[in-house]
Amino acid sequence: MDYPIIEHKKTIKEGFIGQRMTVLPPNIKRKISNNPLVKNFYLTAIGHYPKALNHDRERKSGCSQYILIYCVDGGGSIFVKDQQYELSPNTYFIIPKNVPHRYFSSETNPWTIYWVHFTGAISEKIYERYSGTELPVLRAIPYDENRIKIFEQIYSILEHSFNDKEMEAANFNLLHFISSFIYHKEGHPEVYNTDSISSSITFMKQHIHETLGIEQLAKQQHVSVSHYSRSFKQKTGLSPINYFNQLKIQKSCQYLYFTDRSIKQIALDLGFEDQYYFSRLFKNVIGISPAIYKKQHKK
Image 1 (spheres, rainbow, N blue to C red):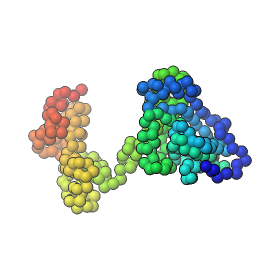
Image 2: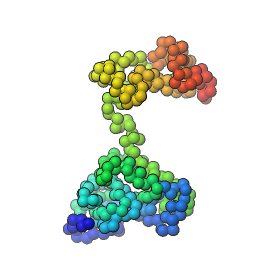
Image 3: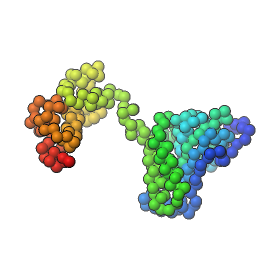
Image 4: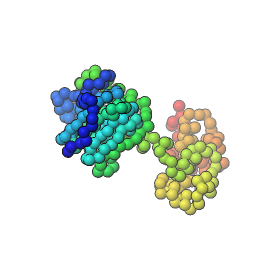
């Protein structure tokens, strides 16, 4: 496959000011591939290229590992399967294995990228979680300093040693690093859950000490009671009131554990005027009475 020729004054694969790159030797890769703790998902190379002017890499036969490229500054292009993808700050892309590709940095605004090659028995499933389609996709992601810290920790470990425990630690962190991209939405539901039911649950948590009826909850979402109840149960498996009560019981566990409040006071604080109804509800949800829970778990 012939990709477009870009007029560069100079094109280079690697060799940039400030670059960092580690490629595992073949004997280390063989050891990892036989290590039952990490053989299912492990890296073979990792690097950081700041302001990588004239960076240009083409693999006409593809690569036997998946390649994640994460852009934090500048820009560049990736060509895969006759498709062009333009990376910009806070975007990432995973190049599928064994697929011809080419990628290069912008001439006018060269990219700063973090990259890693990874493979292993579950790498294909991880890739499928990222892509979700037959074609790879360019994804945007909010910048997270913790993600960079994980990368730095991996790199530091590899600089220190290729011994078994160090490689295990590095690859445990690798899964955390890759997951911070692919599962970012699932890991941060408060950012992405903007539908009406998620909004209603947030409202419940903000009014956990109040007594709210189904009419008030539906009105807060500007929908009918029947529509609200049906939609809520479809998403959560519970009726709105049952869900709200479970939130209250979860909160009561915190009060029983961390405070000296009486069970009667906790019930009142959470909107239950009947202490005995509260106790019955608590036992239905937790499996034991609040008195026994307090005795077992109180510090």
